[in-house]
Image 1 (cartoon, one colour):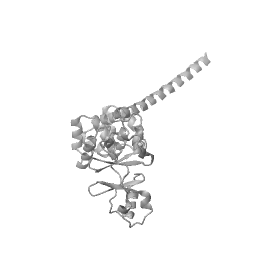
Image 2 (cartoon, one colour):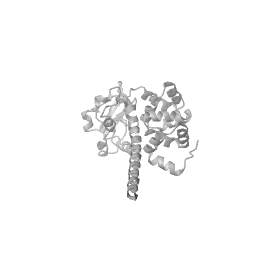
Image 3 (cartoon, one colour):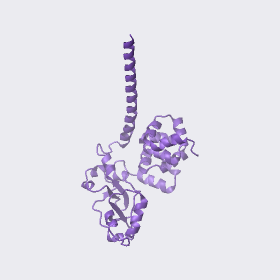
Image 4 (cartoon, one colour):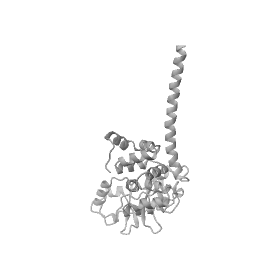
Length: 279
């Protein structure tokens, strides 16, 4: 369905997705459906990213399955997985069945991980290189990707086994025709996708790395775990992921209510003072 929201509303949703998410989370089912159906699918996915998992799940279940699946397919992977975890299994399978096979497969794979293991927080959409790439090609790929992967780039073989990493500084300082295999070095630290996130909270590698490669038990590259992601969980690491996200939304709502109450209190105080002066 084509978007029916006006340009001003669309602009607000685009510039303030977090505020829009808090507002939508408080609406009833009919209003939620009307707003999400009117939004372009990608914009709806951007707003969904800022919702707590429980609120995102509730909103999606108010929509026709076809609409909900389209939004989920465009949402960031971690946000989509968080929303699906809150749903019942038949609801999850129904939505996944409406998606393209590659997208559904990625979500199913991520849902297999517990919420407290590294694999659940891996960023898999990162630039990787092969040993046969030349430096000039590698730098061109890096610029086109627009990604900030830290100071190292993973190097994989044809079966996606992690062979090592190459420093961006090494690429910048060498001839464009030199092969990556001559510049790469073994990854000093790799993380197991099945390991608990708590085990890497204080890892010394975070002092010098923005991200660390994650592999499965067969050394197949899964993606990277970012230091910022770990630091977010430093207090009470994922004891209740859904509760933490829900609490963030609740606090925002309470803050809004508090300011309204304070404003009303001051307004009432001014009225009392004026009445006293008049008397």
